[in-house]
Length: 292
Image (cartoon, rainbow, N blue to C red; front, side):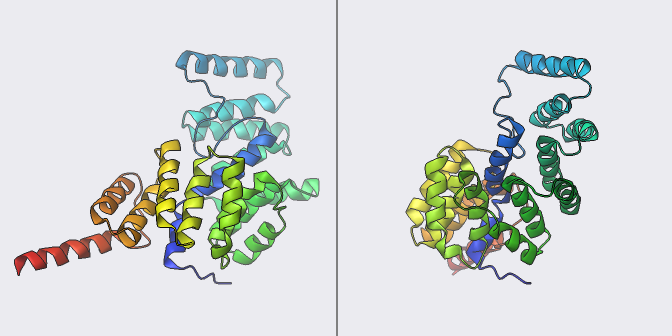
């Protein structure tokens, strides 16, 4: 089933990781930690010495309780917080060898698969867990849906998204992401507002609320929430791209739009809405006017 996406909705795709963070906050409830997708665990200490102490303690406890999956799982969290995915995968594999149905490690391993675009591997892991347990929590159903969507199997993804309970706060972020990319994107404002109310410091929610506001014809308010997303997570690319769109096409500040686009291109290289070409065309037109 082919899904049609309008130009502005494509901008929502740049926030895939941001939006997925809301899902992973829900998975973190299962994992008993504050781990975010591609970022540091909230419990990870600011002090390097204290971080080393965390590693030492986890290794020591692992030796003392070699049959417990929690400790290799904890080491995987710490390695991911330091940006070492290969080491994290090794410890996750250890945890799952001890208990293949240890849901914190199932969820975290699926996150790594997702971040590395290994969507079929993530689905195989999640489906095998489902088959053994007979059911999965909403957070892992959402993970399956996101991987199906990444593979453009929208029929399977839509069915899984529809099975999620919209009354659960932990489902709001992923359901909002899904709605922003669906034919019902114009109805996303209420869900975006609820997500902001429940988790006001999550950058993904501000970015998505900005997109919903833009669809609602409120570019000034949208810009404020894209900027808030950057304040909360300065390294995220999606809000920069969305700000370039707002400034270029809605508020007609080409210089500021170009600045946001350049900042975006410094950390990302895809440009599905052709903003680079649009700005180059503007520059060529201006040069032509000067020449006349």
